[in-house]
Amino acid sequence: MVNKNEKFAFEVVYAKNLPKELKRIFVKALEKYHYVIPTWCHKIYVKYEEQDADGSPAHVQSLERYREAIISIAPSIVGESPEERIDRILLHEFIHILLCPLVTEAENVIYRIIENEKFRSWAESQLIAKEEAVVQDLVKVIKNNNPK
Image (cartoon, rainbow, N blue to C red; front, top):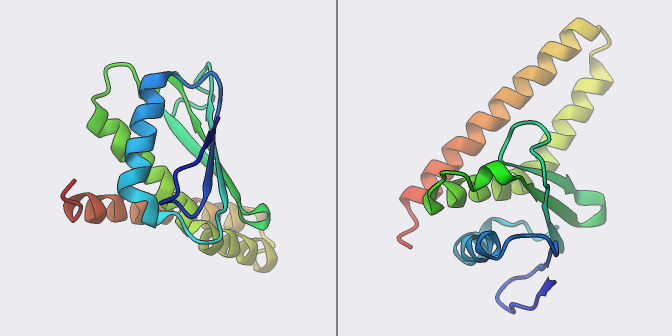
């Protein structure tokens, strides 16, 4: 199902198996945070995975080259989670989309200039840790400054 909401500069395609309650929460989060989605992203696919792949309640794959992002939502996002927690998780994934070009380029630089596998692995882990820290900081800033 495609979102025809004209206030977004991007299209949203929802998986058919996405539970209605999760879709409602996702749409609500997009209405609040659509401005976080960068202009390079023309389409977002929302997948619902029947099993948690890596133990995380959601993850995103940003495909800047194709102007798309895929947000996968796992059953663990629901559980005992209040709507506010799900909202925070979705905002977290939206920010990962925003940071994709920067992080991708940093990964490319690491790959090109660090030949030693041990140092490359260390640099990649540092990048991931710093990216997550920045994403969490941005979530906090946006949540604290969004009255909705």
